[in-house]
Length: 395
Image 1 (cartoon, rainbow, N blue to C red):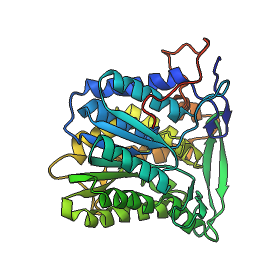
Image 2 (cartoon, rainbow, N blue to C red):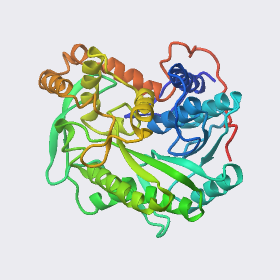
Image 3 (cartoon, one colour):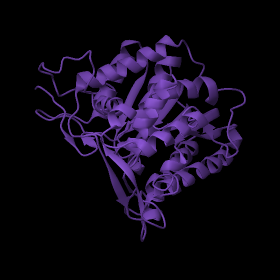
Image 4 (cartoon, rainbow, N blue to C red):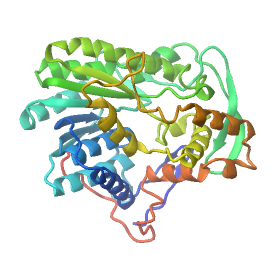
């Protein structure tokens, strides 16, 4: 079939297998161009099919020849219907990894569930014996609690009062005002239950109970802080409470890992176009301005550049540099004073008339479509493409 992008709000309902493969290949080539990385050789990535999770799996596999297991929840293709982009990303990753003799297997299912944890444990026992690192990069709007069966839904809301500011429709370029009503009822608790650290801790507990964590084991989860501009809707909002919980969980996990000299880390990453970030009002306009300013200063990074720098300049040093809260700050370039001052200056000026000249909205759009395998110059989108693609190592 000929596959074209079909958008609905902040998501694309189609994905292109050849384009997704091109995106994966570009990341692999970047990692290979940087030389070998000294990092763990047996890696489990939870949330492995897109964004920072995918970049982590690629960096582990093609940077240090690590054996990787990826866990994710993606839609499979059927005749006449494309898969989700994460499915195609994983199919491409495994094809290219197996071609180079790298171990790569995947589990598609609800990572919050006991069943998927048990399936992963069985696979590690059978194939790897133990693992040296877990990357926790799960992003989901809902969670069915494995103990109670209750389904929780997260929300992206400010706390205490309505938040009003600018946003942009990145499809049309219209800059307008948006108001977001504050959290009410169980919104905060539900968001923390979905996006906090409980499931991360459950994964580590389950793996440790089965003696599957090696000596000097490491685990890392990804977080975000952002500037004052986005604080009301992000860091000081419901999602920020979840991030607070996630970050506090790192200390709890570290305490549990003392007997194997293990450590849990939080990496605070920069703002990047992901399916999750596209859904948050205000963020697309902030990122469009941020991209422009960072590119003007030659310090812009995508997911793969961020994770490569995390691996080579932070996570695997003898002394891991952290901030006063114990977090790795790989968002240091985004949060540079000169970068943030310029973004704040442009924020005051930006409107529908000048958004294309003041911001990198075109770059934002391009990155958005790249998430789904579109807008790659190397791909001929006019040709018939086989939509039913298998993941070679899917369990």
